[in-house]
Length: 202
Image (cartoon, rainbow, N blue to C red; front, side, top):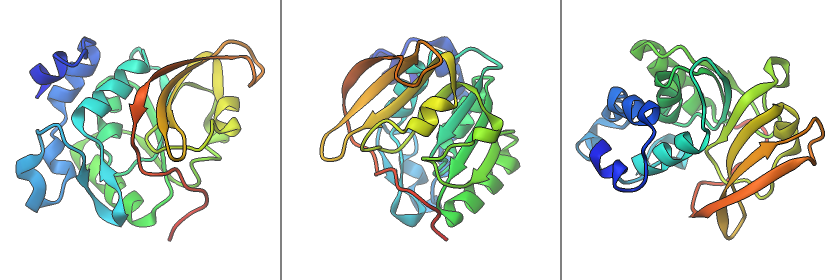
């Protein structure tokens, strides 16, 4: 799988080593585990999906993170992206609004030994009590850049987020100053993620 990802421009050793380490099949329903290492998004609980490996790798590489950095992940989902971030040596705080997914992913990550700090909550609000963060990674499509997440990003920090309603683009955002308006934005192509929703879903 990793060799195929290298042909798609994934050249960060930190990222490829993490993808080699994390057993993707353990984040899927048993009936789908035979497809685990194909470059496909697959269904999980609550009508959500586990992103295809190339998307996980691409977002992880765009973070340009270094080990021990503190990262906020919005949208834990199955926990696969969370595990990849942990395998990269990052200090991971992850938030999920779906109670069923939160319970499943928290249990799975603990059983596999990934020490992410997992929270049930509204991703739009983030985790201000644990900020600021060196990096913010959003794994669902937001209609616009959430201001609360920008506030929780350190000066010089990076956010990677898919933005758009009908048409989503992958954005790489650098917070250049203390003000949330002082940012630089680069676009990295079209993408398609499940929508980012507000409030908890029990």
